[in-house]
Length: 457
Picture (cartoon, rainbow, N blue to C red):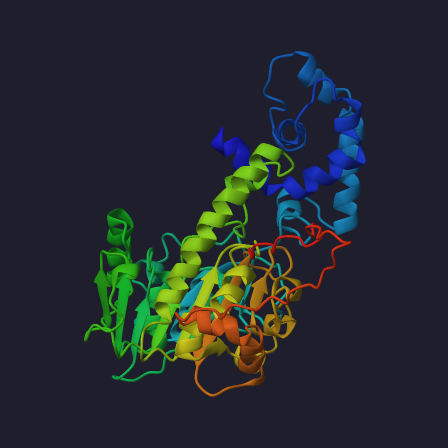
């Protein structure tokens, strides 16, 4: 069943287009009562050798009745996208999104030139400057992440000696953004925290960027994931990392061990909604029960995400904090950032969003301005979109401490003096009500037109 679902997910955008074009759900609403069911059955009909694996009943017949039209729509899509076979269709730009197989070079083990030379010759692959190539024989260096190479998805590295010795690390481009944007300097004085480190890709990336210098405190509270983290860091030859099987929220920012931490990376638990080919990607989002469940889940996640971000802002020497998720939901992204910006921790710590000029300024896809209190802040945020940016869906925000900027000033305008005083622990002054003058001939009437102040999400 899992295999059937995963194979269906690979073609979901194509299948959805075909089903809608043939009005299958409308014409066969008596028997095909779910888009999920239609996706699985139409996938078997069009892409499986054995056809639909089901008994010869009314549900199967409801699909076979439209066999010719379904095949006809599939041919139209192939012609339109210029693909000749089913595999290329699944990986085409119009499908679930062509995502290369990204490989990051671990500078703790070797150099980029060594990796390129070793990869090109035995495999007969060639380095190209065409960053939109889908040629299985070509690979290219990413334009945004130094030391990141992009290969055709069909290329496997599981038995590659350079992968086994830790020089090559398989890591999606979006997952490389947090460490690259945190960019801790190579210095013995640099102290970094990776708050939720497992499985270790971002931690090893930080170590590589730091040249194995300075110190990284890597936290992971789950003991099984912690074991994976330790294994990963050993393989990647990260000598400047100290791991802790514990919760980052339990750390004391004023502890002598952590009080000089200068950079913090936060990649907390999230819905994972930006990851292509997750099994829950197939679920319909129109059912009320599912929507209610998702809203509750997102609320719990965002509360946790906000708490970990506020905790990071309490570290007295922290200069830079990067917050990221592999989610596409604003509840976990823009909403968390906007609430953090007006929190007492941000105000007392003088944290604000780094301007766009410091956060990959050439990256076009920024935050959603309609989800921020100040639309200008959205320019400081980064979003990636599957199928468009050749990567999984991701969100990154960079907080910096220091001199006031236009963004910092806009942040402080969001709160009036009363709110700032209340956030800092003071009491909000009571507003005096003006007494209405009444006469004996009139009777005061309760004003029911004034609505209750809505709660902020």
